[in-house]
Length: 318
Image 1 (cartoon, helix red, strand yellow):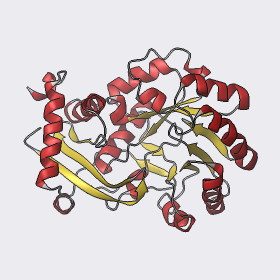
Image 2 (image 1 turned 45 degrees about the vertical axis):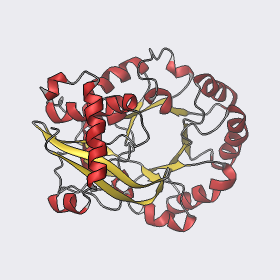
Image 3 (image 1 turned 30 degrees about the vertical axis):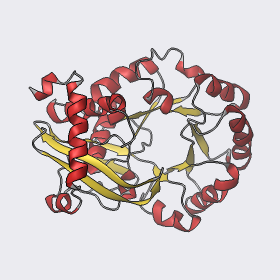
Image 4 (image 1 turned 60 degrees about the vertical axis):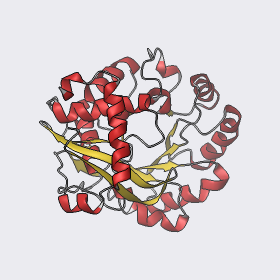
């Protein structure tokens, strides 16, 4: 695996959480192509589960699928209102729109533009744990008053579980847990329904399909599979996970359109708000175009080397 991998730098169409270029690694194993793409700022310890997911998908046969198509939500970053139509057109047939938000004052117009584009849509408001409890208590009522009938849930409004519990109790809102799960994978996750109503599970950050299955059994909440801004290779593995689990809710797996280009031979085409699950293979011309510099390749190889030397990968690398 270490000798036959490709390190890529793919530009994004918008500023996505400060990212304008997505760096990632793809490689092939006996079970097809896989991707390793923890964000650059992540520690080796945090990136380790991402590598476990990538290797498992490449080297182990996946369980049978319960679904062969997955409904997806549109994903709308915090962009200028003038860009909303262009971005939402990337998701034909999507009935749910996930919107990255910061505050009511700064993002009200963004939400209004999204609902003008699709007046029947449900919206998911993603804060990425960015609010303090006091700020959440100021912001939540404003969003509920203006957009309450459209809001499916608030995603990770605060970081601490006790804060989320207080928000649920005080405002009666639905909450989806993302960082509370992803950054605490070794937790026992008791009584998670006190803190949230949905669990956001991502293929790489959860450690792959076998680890995700065990995690979901512990959490005991309805699940939505989401992406980590992967290429078509990684997204295809996220779709596979959703199919293995039989997820019927709209999943955040349509984000390839936020990249400046995809790298697969089999496009992740959205038809009537769904994407079909099938293996994807890289387009070698695209691989050459987005090939990372030798400096960045060396950085990623060193990262993988450090992580594999930390243990737990013998079954894949021997």
